[in-house]
Length: 238
Image (cartoon, rainbow, N blue to C red):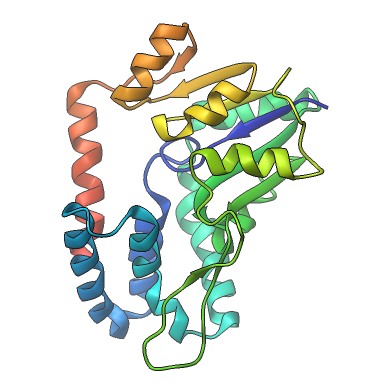
């Protein structure tokens, strides 16, 4: 059975889901907002290239180390129902539904945490969710989330590594589709026979035009700036 792989952030979902998660979480737990100090410090270190995006993601999720698993699960489910599902990119969602109707396997494969992505499983039949697996230590005063898979953050080459390692995935990309917005997913896009660039960033756009890949939803300069400011607002204001 051929497979259609979909990135999530800025592809199936128009934005950065982890930033939207942070906003939703702090709305439920306003007394935890002081953790934003760690986030802002982490962003500063990231911009100075002292830490990478993997470590920054762990900093963003620090408050969950101090929550009960039942709270994390119930809040994640509510978050998906209220914040993610209503805002899915309709054009890309129609691609999901189209491939599903043709009996293709659908895989959302994303660097976003699987503790909330898993609740997207009912958006279409034959859907598999592959997100970044993260564990939240519950002991000690200073706690940091940990990647709980040997592949770590499900980003870039790790997506293809997962596909080749999994018994459920095809060993070649023949007949397979891949959808993404980012050059980080070039390994996945080049692995699949039919790569599709969705609102691509500049680096991916150049590759897509070079190889004559299909492109969905080009953004103009104003739309790109607006999108960037929305992300900045989620980081700073929540």
